[in-house]
Image 1 (cartoon, one colour):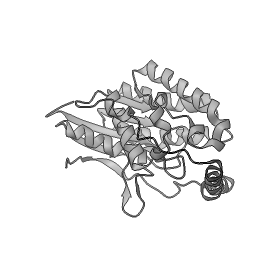
Image 2 (cartoon, helix red, strand yellow):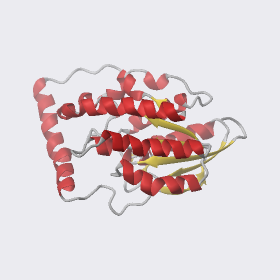
Image 3 (cartoon, one colour):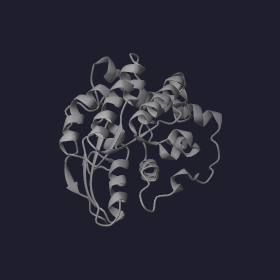
Length: 259
């Protein structure tokens, strides 16, 4: 990928790919996929980019709603990241979820796209109360690596790096990234895709901060329970999703402008 190359980049997935945590719903969200498209354009390539991701989507719904539109755009590069919404639900079926992801890998690589995906960091180091989910996340990552290997999909293995669990990369809901976190993920994918100028700077640690005492840490957990986990549980009980009524923010290929 470089000067003069034509690139059609299509991103599919859930809130992480949509860009939740990087911006807001008034001015719009940006996210790592937008940032990755900008890095592609910075190589001098002529980049067109579509983002079909919608927050709250489970892997099966990502495949059902986004795969065919993605294929219709004839991407030369695609990113697929979904399944985290499945992992955190009680009815999680690892085989079924990875099957959905692998079907997307197979279809997109079979259509000639270069496909990239991600692993998910140790959730307990971001949200300690989610520690019971750690075995699921570790298994999910191993299955992602294996499925990607079967289809020649590039893996930005962010879970293997200490920086991935730095709280400064995570929004207050502990499920989505901050702008800094989204930028680091874009860097990871740029490196995995071997974009010109990409390096391992995304892995570098941030300056060390003092560790909070036990009482402030406990108070932080209580605030998180009330502000984020509680409302999330209520939505599940009501059969509602954060993505209800939403549509893709960038459903068609549009040129990416470089600053």
